[in-house]
Length: 230
Image 1 (cartoon, rainbow, N blue to C red):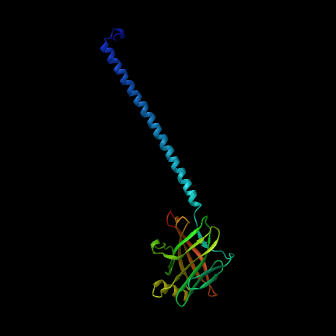
Image 2 (cartoon, helix red, strand yellow; image 1 turned 90 degrees about the horizontal axis):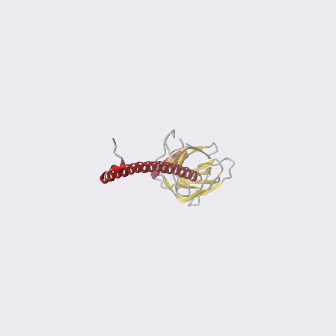
Image 3 (cartoon, rainbow, N blue to C red; image 1 turned 120 degrees about the horizontal axis):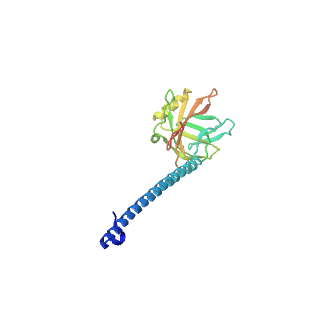
């Protein structure tokens, strides 16, 4: 049987107090560990929720800064496009310019920005293959840089322009041949928002008209700095 507490020796009572204190320390450690775990789970959930909210807010902000270029509409007013050698074009909505001069090949397309932010045009490239098909755009590093800054405000009409001036360049030869033969030209235009981000590429086609003019149509869109729309 157990001895009554008053009959325990001093040493036994001290040992009993040590045992009780040890048990309380263990119980306290378990409680503290449980509370810490609960706090960690709550913190993780809070951080995850905050991260998700921040991502949604970031996507909403970027969506408000995203341009998207397409061809102008037939009812849009004509645009006037000039080159530095004093060559000028007046182009109606939905049309394009493609002309071979004495020292250059001139190309221009009226554009409408249907996005929600200013479009800043960066560069372009001409594709002269036999079929556009599902061909991907060439590397961004190969695009020809524009010689002047072109901006198109959201909901407004502007233009893209480009020219070949070196008669020994393959692009000059291909563009001249296609224009003179009245064959389709395909142009990829690189652009982004006014923060120099969210770069996109839109593919345009120039189709010959019966009156020696050109129609402009839009084919595909790619995103350079984010997932593609398909």
